[in-house]
Length: 274
Length: 251
Ligand SMILES: Nc1ncnc2c1ncn2[C@@H]1O[C@H](COP(=O)(O)OP(=O)(O)OP(=O)(O)O)[C@@H](O)[C@H]1O
Ligand SMILES: [Mg+2]
Image 1 (cartoon, helix red, strand yellow):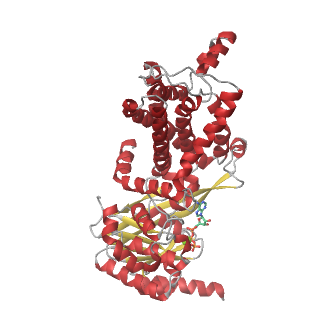
Image 2 (image 1 turned 180 degrees about the vertical axis):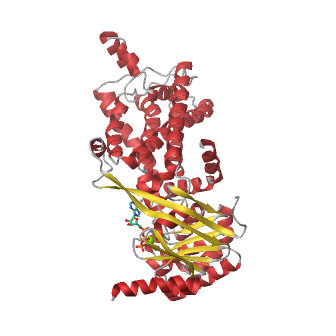
Image 3 (image 1 turned 90 degrees about the horizontal axis):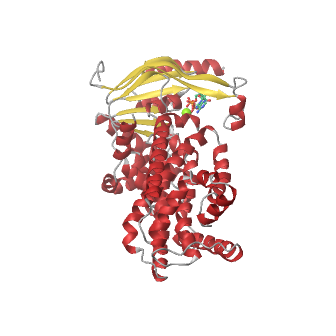
């Protein structure tokens, strides 16, 4: 059943592209700055976090090794951009079924294209942001270019992870509309439990004082490993460690498989629940 | 498909469809927890044991009062709902026009929406490009084709939607009451298109509350009453019986 659904998805791939274009084009219609907003947003967030965490809290991430980079805003963005991608795909994906009720109750098409199109259209924004970041890293003395092919693969892993969660929650949201509200509360918490705005060394210090189990529990978070992979490639300019890479790929595959199975099993009855 | 004659386009075999009706707001966690303690959902059988066959190349009408489950049955045929009992066999590519313009994005132009809607209905970009002029011509909204569709009148919206749907080349076309919104000229245009369709061996299943329209267009008609099949057969007989029952009720 899962395989025949995959065949149907592939047969209708053009619809996926069109839904993606609908998201991309519709998003910034009638805004003066248009697509620039997708750059302005992360820049503004970068300024705020840099102000608060580099100047007030004095977070001091280790310099890039071997890149030699030592700039908090750049270090921050190497983790924050992947995180923002996950947040956008999950929030957009969770609501993708309920927001398209008009479409789902009127035409048949494989419903998975809706969360998938959110992941793809957000991926375009993510790609542009990473492009700008790469140029900045280069200007400030890093050498990210040779690592870009691996970065693209890491983006794929991240996309699987985020889409898997989005598909799972999208189904849950059809049954319990509370889901999307829970998600908007839980996502910021999750962010603070991931070393995105502060270096993991702070948690290691805390664990050394209060007990090793803190670090062990902390490292169960798959996003930690995915962020580490992005930082290794972009900020440090080195191959990510085997543990991080395997944890990232493994968790993304499991999450995607579960999301896919749950979604394809429930999609036939979505129309009557909306 | 075994047991189905080659010239049968649609087989509806003892189809039933139920909805769960919840007595309170059901889609919250609170009520999910409550559900453990007492039953808050009833099964409502919207379609009950309906069977009929539609020969290829014919126009088949569904009539019945408001709430008699015509739309629910159409949605089951269009794969939007899954039947809880029985089975539906559709021989050929199905295209449905249950609500025209569903899938239109208000901020996108008519042109962009034609491509989007075409692909929702199963066309490739190439196919839409090949038929683009025909679609625009049929819709009659040429001068507004590059305007966002939210600036369209509701009639124009409908025309553009119908234009896309009739150019998707379906073997079976499912139509729910959409002709009631267009003006006379457009209804006439659509009627001609439907005749052309059946002439080409395509099949049309339509719902309409306009009995003259049903008389004029349909070969056979099914009369639904409270989700059950009250009568099915040649148009004149069934429409006459239905008309008589309405008359009897209103006098
Ligand atoms: N998603 C749903 N959940 C619960 N009940 C539904 C749902 N959809 C339809 N119904 C019920 O099914 C019955 C049939 O509705 P339907 O829309 O099929 O009627 P109809 O024959 O198309 O009516 P009309 O002539 O007004 O268009 C109605 O009682 C309606 O309340
Ligand atoms: Mg109806």
